[in-house]
Structure formats: C-alpha cells, structure tokens
Length: 237
Image 1 (cartoon, helix red, strand yellow):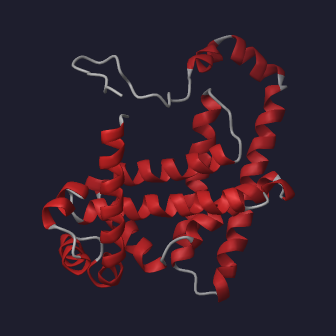
Image 2 (tube, helix red, strand yellow):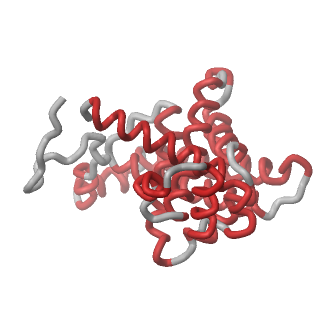
C-alpha cells in the first residue's frame, strides 16, 4: 500500500473512531441502525459526506468497526500480558476473556442481534473467524495445513458459546462465565490430546497414507493479497 492510500485509510479509521464514540449512547436504544449512524454523525460533528465514505453501509459498518476495535483492544491486552507464566490452556482462555472484557455488553448484544440476521450472518461469522485467528496467531500458532482450519473452527465454537453465556450472565463480575469458559477450554484441550493419540493409531495411519492423503493438500489461506486476477493493477509506491 502506497503512502497516499495509507494516509487515506488512517483518516477513515480516525473518522470511524469518532463516529463509534458518538454512537455509544445511541446503540443502547436504536442498535447498530441507520438511526444510530445519523445521530452519531450529528453528535460527532463529522462531515456527512466523509461519514458515508468511512461507513457506506451506515450502522452495519459501525457494528463491524466496533467488533474490530474490540479485536485491537484484545491484541493490546495479550501483548502486554505475561503469557509465558500461563499454561497453554490458560493463554487461550485469557484471550477469549480479554476479548469479551474489551467490549460493552449492551453494544455486543445489539451486534449479535444484527449479525444473527440471515443477510448479515456471513459477515458476522467472518468477524468471529478474524477474532479467533488473532488469538491463535498471538499465541504462536504456525499451522499451515488442515489444523489451521480445525483450530479456528473449534475456538470459534468456544468463543460463540461463551459470548452467548456472558450476555445472559448476571453473576458477580461474570464469575459464572469465566468458569464456563474454563470448562469449554478444557474440552478443547482434551480434543487436542485425542488428536495426538489418534495420529499414532495404526488405522488412522493407514487412512492418512491412503484415502486421507487429500488432507495434505489443504493449506491455510495466504496472507498475501491475490494479485493474479484479470484487471488487477499493482499500486505504485
């Protein structure tokens, strides 16, 4: 990305941040709606034309921006934590916990309602995948094969179930949620242990050397942008 594009994206990110801050008081009543977006534009003083460029889909883009802001807060918390003093299962649990604690419960509830709609479900799933991918990457996951997908699918299931539990939790300081999280993470660790044992199973070895060899060709998505499609013009530095 050249300097002009970087500057523009930074400007748009700052605009979205202003809109998000102004939207917080309105989300409780109107959700991540166009009404909230309009009110945020008025309260923030952001030019309406610039606001539409930063969030062309109005409230939906604000909801996406709110989720990504939570991801950034989670990354900062994980990078500041002494992860080396934790067991691996504790690191995973801590990642999920700080991600939830980085958000407002009511704002998240409104987001869950929005992304539960069929028209937005795919985008919601993509956001969750982005969140759990960040957790695995910060914890040092280097898998590039089918394990890349299984780890994210399993943690996405954990994250989603814990999120829903948290939204309905009225225990002191969400104590019940963190206990539920620990139980779910322990289940994941048991699955990983089972997978290791299965690799040494003679039947599994036979399968992997025969019909299961196709799994060797499953690779993690490339982090590089696709540049070989028709009409693509590489940006100049």
